[in-house]
Length: 287
Image 1 (cartoon, rainbow, N blue to C red):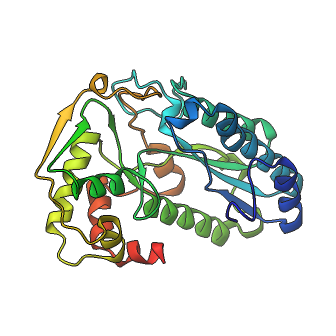
Image 2: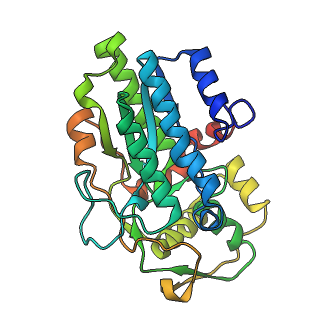
């Protein structure tokens, strides 16, 4: 379903669509993700990130369907110095994080069987995200300034989709009509292995671009076939780059529960980034 076929701010449409389709599994990959804009549009962010997931969960409960939903590392305040696990207490610092946490709670309270995958620093070879923004700016500026004191794990949307598909396929193969034992219902962290800063991520992006021998369709489109002229990335502090929404300084997630339950570990963030530049999957995802 795209936005035209299902408007997640329309409660009646959400209920009618689920009752009409009667799916076995609902995968909700939609969200209001404009972190800064959410500070001035809290009502819309709440409708999409909190109210819609709750309604989807309530309808899933009625028909016995599972709900797969994606949440965020921004439910945490970032004051911890080691990776967050699922038992750590959330404490979101911005509207986006608060609405995503409310969405999680609405799903849990519904009683519907669910898989909530918390991820973070998500990028892809289409849409609007950090990867594409850096590449576009790199064709316009010789130097880029990027925050160096926020730490996370950049995660490819392609890898999230692949992991979700693998989990659901295995669940169907093993359990079929029941999909999963109900005790598997819950929150799981799903991010790339390792950690880095936005500054180091930007440097890695430029490095991958410079070493890319075959310019894929998505890369040519992102750069408008212009050469990358950026020669340096300058680290700056969060205080030097003020923004409407406060970000957690450390939002790395521990993925141990995902590995224990589903035997699944996402690749290291650097490997994921490399694959985005070299794999034909990236271009196929755009088509």
